[in-house]
Amino acid sequence: MKKQLALLTLALLPSLSAPALATDLPLDTPTEDFTINNDGTVTHKKTGLSWQRCSVGQTWDGSNCYGTAQSFTWDDAVKNYDTDCNGWRLPRIDELNTITEHGKVGPAINSTIFPNTPSIFYWSTSSADGYYPNYKWGVYFYSGNTTYDDKSRSYYSARLVRGGNACSFDTFTPTSDFIDNNDGTVTHKKTNLMWQRCLFGQSWDGKSCTGFSSIFNQGESRTQTDTFAGYSDWRLPTLSELNTIVDYANYSPAANKDIFPIASPELGDVWTSSIGANNPDFGWIVHFLSGYTSSGDYRANAGGILFVRAPTATGTVDLTAAVEGSPNPVTVNQNLTYTGTVTNNGNATATGTTLIFKIVKPSMTFVSAPKSCVNKGVKVVCSIGDLAAKNSITKNIIVTMKKVGAVSLKVEVKSKETDVDVLNNKATNTVTIKK
Image (cartoon, rainbow, N blue to C red; front, top):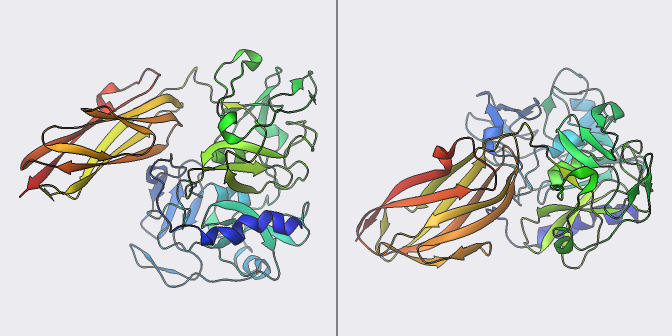
């Protein structure tokens, strides 16, 4: 039964709609977060880890990965690729999570950085023994689910990594990684995020969490606010953020109980702000009984809230806009995809972010836009909301080109914060319209 719960999504997701890029979702792993080493490897700037760009069994030819990813049991994978803590090895599950792209499906990975990645399960070194003996953690790269499977009877793929806590296989969230703020909150040194120690609805008595948590669907959870410990900017964490406090070596709950002293019946399903890339009606949730993740109907499923905030006292927001049109050149009466991208190059979250497209009349007419965008005649205003530091988001609208000549596509980005460099908040690009 435990196996069925964890692998339910793994079994169902391949029957969903065709893989597509979720351009309305902020990216977990934007390309600029990686240094390309020109030898078939990349270094992730956020973690310092070096990754092979190809799966085991594939070959790097200087620009792409060719061949078929090899499949093996976990026992064979560890025997072949985990003998040297200083060399190439299987990643821990928390390391594998850091290259999972929840803004995409099929595969749920940055395909520019990791080309030709199959949409299959990848092993990690980490054990799920506390929950299900003989099972090991991994990521299902069709959807990005963190889950587990039988280490001896299941055949899956692997991607090798080096650096980091190579031989600390089952140490995920040690108490030394957190600062106790003595007010019912802790600050995670690895991310600089501040977390409430209790679920929303519970009370902090100075030592532990009392009472019962409040339960919501994801839509309701997004509207909840709190002023705990004197802060008013508490919010839902993203899936990537919530994954950083999961302790995969613990069970019921899969968390550091000294840091988050929540009774296990309370710490069950916890919502994130992340939306399912293959279905906008699905939201991501972390199941803290064991630590696996899944996405489900945000209107129907129920879960708790563990609030987080990103302190901005010393942080800055630096939004950069970019724009392009495709195809270019374009012919009269042909549709053009008008693409705007926003990147937060600062070290603090931008809130209330909006991206504005200019509709240049009479050279173009508006056709369509995502649900988060509103057509206002001479401009289309797209709501982005919170955009975390070092993250990017892309919006596409469709216009029909009506007049021969050169037209400047223009976008502008704004947020509630004071931007440290307003000159890069606007972007222009020229497209040519032919007969």
